[in-house]
Length: 231
Image (cartoon, rainbow, N blue to C red; front, side):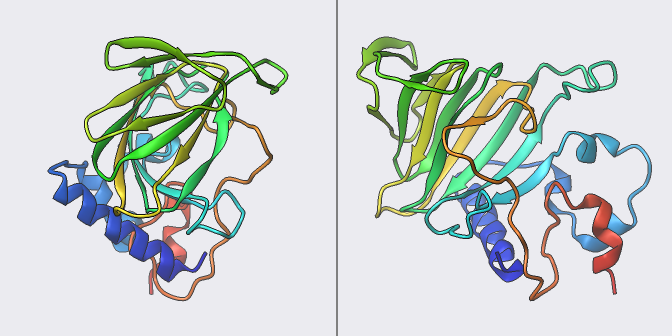
């Protein structure tokens, strides 16, 4: 992705967050110069990958497959003594027409919440330890309602609605072709993208970036590189 595209996506998400009346922590607004002057005591942000995260899953087709997100809080499975939080919270934004690849988590349970804007769908299957997608009915929990659906069903989430995603439950985000972007919340157990994501089809994680302009915000995997962007 071009850096200019990443910058614009972050600005669009900032605008949507403001429009929906949500607030994010102060570090979400730090620029490159602020990161370059960072004092001790903020290691948690980098260690737990808090902040901005734009991904095209290494496919180079962000407008079709991808999303932007901001991690507000998170624990750390590898440093439980230092970071004992067993929970995480994120905001995501998806544009109309975007999807995010089907995956499950071995350990994490999460609620996916429509925080406002457009409707969106979650397509669901049961999975097994080997990564297979099963042709069995899926148990659905949405805002106090428990029911079952056929494998491959799409669950519509309108603003304010949510769905609980259990371990080994394959899920795929799908946005309508019209209606604008959606602001999506994720409230979950501790998040560990490096070890707890099982994608049905192999994908990457962070985009390859073409530096055509200065970063507007650093991504969560770039904090250690701040000095290279300071003129």
